[in-house]
Image 1: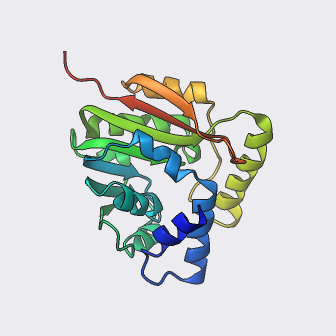
Image 2: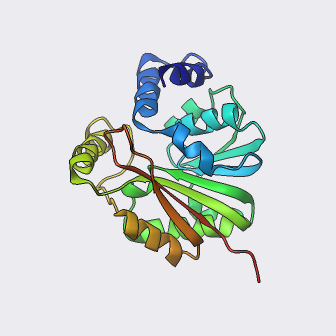
Image 3: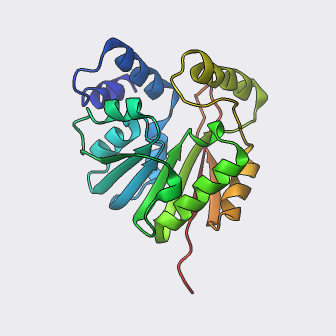
Length: 217
């Protein structure tokens, strides 16, 4: 994992000490490699809430056949993402509410929904549904609310990241159980919703939910 982090973070042009520390921390706590099996090898992929672009940088190295796009509300993090030399994704400041329809073959959302109230989550998922091509996949990575011994310290860390360290924008946190997240994705219109735990060996209760936008019948 350390070797992988060095390879990915080396793609950034001279990040400051604070940015470098943040990138290493993000890499250490998120199992990016366990998300790869859920990602296609070709097509147009959008990362919603792409932040510093660490996931996009990793994808550029591991999935060179993808055309990468990222969107985020935080201009500061987008500026850091733009310094990555891997893949040169198309980056845009904005939200998932105004994405072009039927544009992407895959959309990823990693550790973003927990900072959004339920009604905003629903709008984001609906926006992603519209932006996907027919048969396209959405891959959502979040923290499950169980087991409690993993969730409680992880939730406290995220609270610090949002309110104290301000690494993440947001106010109150809105974690969902795995079942509730799966239901929210079904309510947005997605089908074949499948949830997988990817937290073995990690202190955080990482889960990934993959679903499809149905093709017209």
